Length: 299
Image (tube, rainbow, N blue to C red):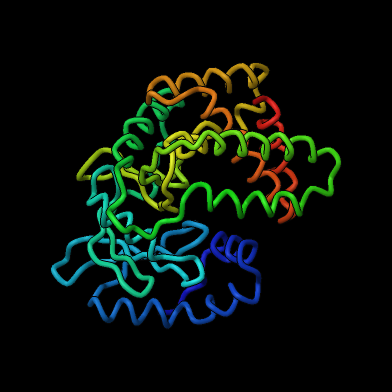
């Protein structure tokens, strides 16, 4: 199969895992995809572009002609947790897993061009809340998912190492303090979470109107999972004169609609926004970083 990997995939993998690691896998990608297609006897329609930042998605037809999507994930991006989460959800609120092995997931075909971002904001948030609620289930006994405490501990260490900018340091300190307070109370809510839930991760489907894709699963409290959704369309919030007040209203509205403590949602939203902003700075994406950090400052 001859193709050029989508630019978004190349850029994101290189930023996240380093050019040498990402480049080695990307060189092997055509062969990896071809082997996965042949093993499943799949016919290719097209590669989804711009696609995601951590995997290649190919629209395919199964031997019986049924449409599907083949998602190929590099081993260093840990594809197994996604497979395990999709297995646990069994298509309830999420894309359905048909089969999965060796970093290649054969998935139900959704309408990749239509996400919740295509809807007006109020409708999109309503549909997002209804979708994410379905995903919050207890993990299977003996699960191997990372916990929120473990994931954010690594992120916190990286944030401490990257606080050379004196303008960013106060926000980083506030985010780290918020995380410490959230974990200090010994919250025992251990639900299976999507981990990267936002409007762009919910696609239109035939089996159900909206289904979540692309989980980076983690186990912990629901407020953590909702925090990324709060800052959706951050560029619109920052551009609006009422951005700060609109952000606080969004926190309250989402928390109340899903029976989540407002302050816990605010705290995790702050931590996750600052963490993303610091990563953007480190990657040289200054404009993205400024948007995220201005948003975080409102919290």
